Length: 262
Image (cartoon, rainbow, N blue to C red; front, side):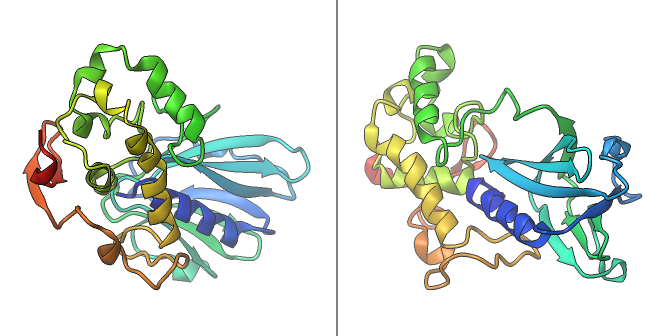
């Protein structure tokens, strides 16, 4: 956590707060252990603008110089509890804010993370070790699976492969439980055979998209301002936290239904 849905929602929140603003600086907290040199930020006198995009579990913040047009890309991953907060003044910066974008109007975008697992670094593009987004790049996502399913790694159970970000970028623990349950699939079926199931591949898009539309899962101290509040995540979930569970080989708790075991 956060998974695909939550990262997409936080990216949209970031854009809604940063839109039409000019920024003058980026800072990190003294407590942060992230070593990224933030002096690489565009240095135009008129400042820079920021906008963000997401892809699976990753997010990139684009810093664009107002005069020069120079673009810098800062990749942000949120760890277990990282999230964006917007405040109107430096005196209101929340505790555990570790990355801060300071605007000319005095407002600040803060990356808040109690556990300090969030990271950021300058990049040229998305990580090469992560696959296409199952929701927003679905055709590329399916193609990547089909072209690689002959590899030895696809002999693993599908419950383990769904956590492999090289092929299932953005899928995490609660999403895999819901995907497998709704596909009526044995979690220990080989990934090679499982991805032949068109319904399961479709659910890799549909389930995260549903989670996104209703506002995503809960993140400590962050209340999502978007989503359909007519249904809660607990009401939406059919398997995660409700069926049987065990610790899988990745060390994560797998929720599943034994009615689909073969």
